Figure 1 (tube, helix red, strand yellow):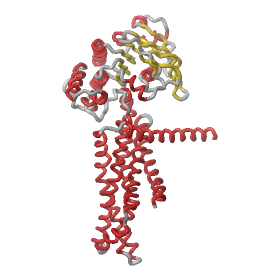
Figure 2 (cartoon, each protein chain N blue to C red):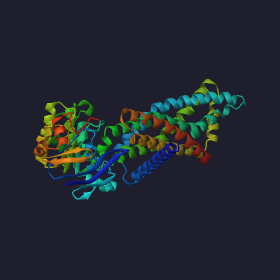
Figure 3 (cartoon, each protein chain N blue to C red):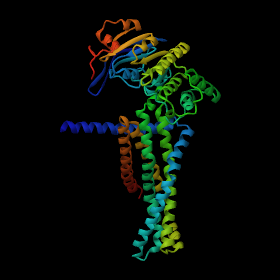
Length: 248
Length: 253
């Protein structure tokens, strides 16, 4: 369970998160939706301690991750995997080395065991015979899948996805969503997905939270969000230009 | 005006504090959790081996020009026989460590900043953190160790090549007695000259790794941020090397 309470975060004079509360239940897929620039990625980075809040608390399984020593924070981070918006593969390493990296550095597995796990993780995301390629030789969709393989290879309890399908064509987009659902069904991790993919994300997530003006405006099942009466939620889902959400 | 001055002062103090912490934390980590040998060897190859060509080239021509200038000056006093001493002492005590460090700054220091800066803006450093790994252990401390080992060795190579560059011009082209060139050198150069040069090189290695890594680690946004960080890194490292050289020389003399 991840619990966020009264979170505040500003960058200079700009207030990004303004008293946000959120509960993310274990084993579920929770999607965070909302207009661009509203702080969804900032919220995600708070969940794993990449950013520290100005005030408020973030708890993972009952343990606060705010203002922890690096060693303590790393102990909690061992529960996490993360797929970044720009994938963040290590560009000087091959695909194999990228996926093997967390295992080589954090486990005492033998080379053969690591090789087996890496090839299985790559196969699970539909990639074969690309382990010797480098990230700059891959397409956007392949990079995302390698990133997903790297995020799941050490079987984390929680995986954070920062816009996993941005910039991909509709078919690859659907394939990535299916992949997230399949890997979630297989491993049962807690997933938090930041996404703009409306309505596709409603088929992936079990909970949806809409972030607007630094707070969670509404949090519920996909159907509850779909049938929301809140004007901002309705406008965001319909993509209308008229409503409380104004383009900056 | 006063507000702007205060803002600049606070920013500068914050930067200095952060840079100081960066250096201390790097040394702490080197002792507490040393990086793997593979990472160190990789950096030794990058900072040391790959700088060899530029070091040999610069050293050769520096020695040759010292031979030429030294001969011109010493011949006015009829002391051409002291050419070997002049070339060797200039190189071993001063020019070897400083020029080798400036060459490595231009070749490897800039690349260190660019590499870490690009990793910062493409979230690769964040990716390391999310894996519960300390980015310093992979990106910073191997470079510190490699630079501290490489610089004294490169300086030694610089000195030897430079001395032979001076010999080539002084002895082979201008006719200085070869025996006098080496005999006078051997008589005048003492162990203190050699180790003061190595001590300088070692500290320059720390400066190159420190500023190179620090500027990359805190690079600003986008390509422009990395480009600015790289320029600042080279300029700042060069300036610190020259200033530190003065202080170290005044202590070691």
